[in-house]
Image (cartoon, rainbow, N blue to C red):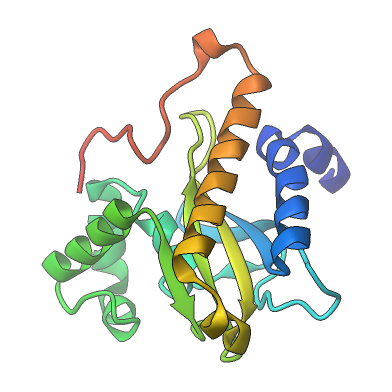
Amino acid sequence: MDYYIRQCDPLLNACRPIMVRIAQETGCDMLLASMYGSKIMAVHQELAHETGQIAFGRGRPMPLFRGGGSKILLASMTVPQLRKLYGQHSADIAEAGLGATWSEFRKQLLQYRNDGHVISIGELDPNAAGVAVPVPVDDALDPAALVMVTTRTRFNLMEKALLIDIATNAARQIETSMRGQRDPITRGQPHFDDRAETL
């Protein structure tokens, strides 16, 4: 079943060659994360080196409120979804520094959405850092995020704006590749732009 999913999933088919190329060109590990209900899961990874920096690899649930991938995915959720999440996890949200109140939590996620990226340093692994961006997908798929990860030492020496550009362009290339796999007439709007109720 796992092999079948990896071969047939349109998002994985679109992202795999792009993630391989970016990992080789930048020396950063690449992670694709997606949201399943209220859980966030790593669905694919490409390591630039055998000793990669990905703390939560493929198939392992990620913390809801820590790490760039989780935060950029939370920013894709609707207000009713976030209200419910806040009602269930307000203490965890405050502990993660995402806001001591519902208003602060909503404001922080709106900032992530407007920025279009999240930089995370040492949240999931004290020795790792990286940048996460949303992957535009249509309404038939769950929201997804692309994460570039490297060591904190190396990250401190890298140009952050360049990393963000590389990750953002890779996400757009994935979207373009996915569009080519289906009839453009039936293509929906990206999750991050198409919301019944905005933040």
